[in-house]
Length: 240
Ligand code: DGL
Image (cartoon, rainbow, N blue to C red):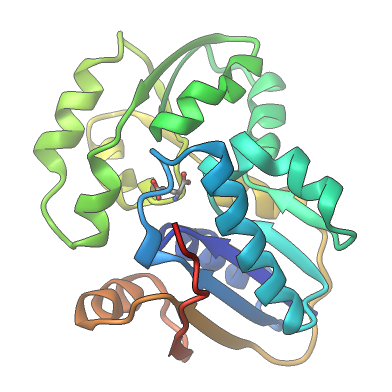
């Protein structure tokens, strides 16, 4: 199968990693729009322009399905994208909502981008939900900078919760730290992969496209993706 995956940057690579674990023998095309990062503070209009450019590009690779490995796009314009394109498109958030609604978790914290929190998508969870919008985290992660102090500040915005939803696909990078603080964490990529039922073909191939390639990016990719990949710089000419 040919599978298209995209995000604003490296966050969706955490989703790609889960996909490869579960369905290793496929051809993956990944687009990370890091020249336009962060998506989490952009308007719906911009998000639609940016994501449709990416989907158009992935379709030139004749992908069979597209996975929106971005919480911000999933929560704000998934239904619009589904209306525009015929190809099967999966969002990253709804499987998590379904999973949590059928779970026994009681008090749940959600860390997500500003636009995801604003969309109120997580209000569909029928539990005691507390959300913190965390605009400072994605730039720190992308630039490989220390995030712990900033994350601690955001955690202080939540009341006492036992479970934290990593509501932005960049946030699995915090998973070990949050687990050490005794939080249970919900990784949306893992939950999506449990739900998907994809074919497993013969061979793993990974093609990564980023709108801006530099040393920092490669360091970050290598921390997440442990298989061989081909990387190409590709700017989709989005003009503001
Ligand atoms: N990783 C994305 C998300 O899940 C986008 C983060 C951003 O670019 O602000 O929301």
